[in-house]
Length: 370
Image (cartoon, rainbow, N blue to C red):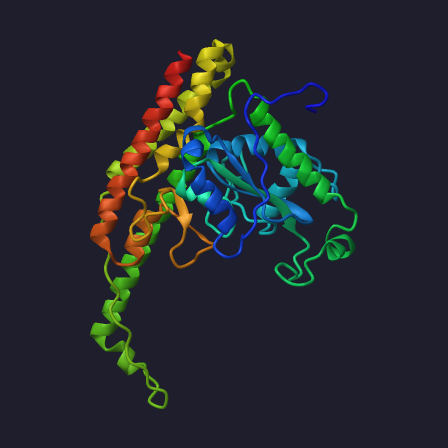
């Protein structure tokens, strides 16, 4: 395309990382070395760890969720002739397919799952706050070959993608996403799905606290009544379990207010975004510069408790799950560990971050005008 006269409106950097398994060394070292430049200018990091036969999967920053959904509506699944979006929607409804969010009931998108770790986006989103997405196809061909001596091009050609169609489909999907961002007069950020997702995470956190409180009450009742002793098997005696810590009743008012503010700001920006293309080149550049750093408002400068390198407050690799993501991790992991005062402090940090993000999105809207 470049030889035919095309040039992107923004810089593209392509990378193939080495040292992925021992601590994501290649990508992490590169991200840290270029941290200043990435912090100032990094708009999005697009990651793919593997690709296979089957369904589309996406996770990461919800600011690009709507755009990626739009792209998958335009891609054709080679096995069914239907759109990739329609097939992924069916897979989500039936519990199949690659990692993604919930079924998206009432949503205009198939939700992204949260970003955890286990692949090279970690240094970009967890540490630097560069908006990141992880994409790929799969779900129909996992036969245990990953990380084995059978993970070869021959096996791929003979057993995984024998018709050699999903490699092409992935290239079309990833390439279209890249072009949508690289060619756009105004980058296709959208924050409404972010607001909806944070609300989902908050509702889940509140429900978890209630479950912990109920479990603590039930355990305490059983201990005080002697139920564990009475139900014990004398031939296989077990010591009664310890009491469970009782989480306090948290005041979620400030969190709910911050989420509402974020939702209002996101809706306002979505309503004005189409007008941004009419701005002068100078104003469009200023808007794009702001969009590129919008994810940074979701970081904590101090990092998460006990692991300051990880700074993202909406999703992070779980302390004990590694690959798996923890959502609203500062608050959630403190509660789960029984550090209830720390959870209150982290709740304040999270609320401030969400309010700052909402204010920042409002400032972007103000650049467009009414």
